[in-house]
Image (cartoon, rainbow over the protein chains, first blue to last red):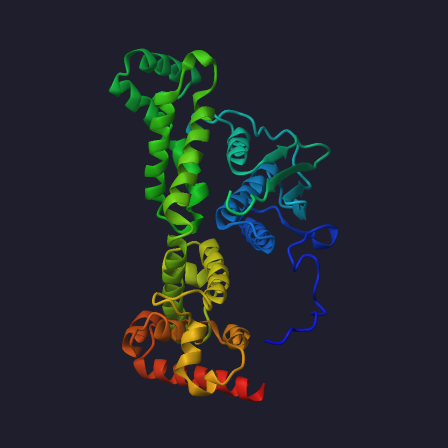
Length: 156
Length: 244
């Protein structure tokens, strides 16, 4: 078998090395119907760095949940931006939602959720899916959050 | 139905002391909405929601049996952790790694049939919205199935088949002109470049060993059409290999 010459497209991201050159950023309306793009990007991005199928599935769910949590109080003008980064076996997703309405109470208990608030529900779910998470209160019309998942060593 | 925190707390304390099943049922009923919300988060892989609610309900019962009201934690928060854990275990033990590809394949086949039908009906290819309406699946499910199926099919071309071979190996052994290739790996990009349906048909024919009629039934086209597509696909592969 002959050895192929290096591809002109060869890049650290293609080899699963990560680093700043492999970062991906996507921006979309904060409409929940658009979250499918976030989840698909999460799956594709994690697969490039050899996360196993279970972790990819957890990450996909977690990114969807992060989008939901950060979109509390979102308006028709809100933009949701996600930045995916992989470094030192850890995949980090940062979420920013703009034009968030002030005074939206995401922490009011809901009887349909056994008294949990939607925000608390999202945080509980994230805690079960990823290694670290953070959802900040909205400030100046912008809400930020992030999740982080470490790649497990093969066979662990 | 109890809803206020105070009522739930009282029931939780009563259940902890008495283990009265009627009290347990009241608490479980009050939290089924929470279970359903959590099950919905996990339902996008196509697993029926009702099944996931059942799995979540088991987690809820486990949470209730372990819950100690004297520790001062909110039951709903405690239960959420247990229910999500139960749903994750369900998929890890039985779902994602093993069943998802088959389910995705089935959904893909369903979509394939619908595309044929709707194309004839509409005189053009259907949209995702139309496919969702016709299949009963959500638009997101359709998009994700199409995307996942694409990844799966490309990855599965060189995966071991039931008899220990792979589509690549079997194809290379089936067709003499393909056998001449110095490196069977050369087939991989060629197979990947075939239209999705033609790759699927080759795999059904040469890996799963289905007859052309069986393939026709599964894909939703005539046996004659399957025959033509197989011949055309092999001719395409052969032509590429000769050209290379």
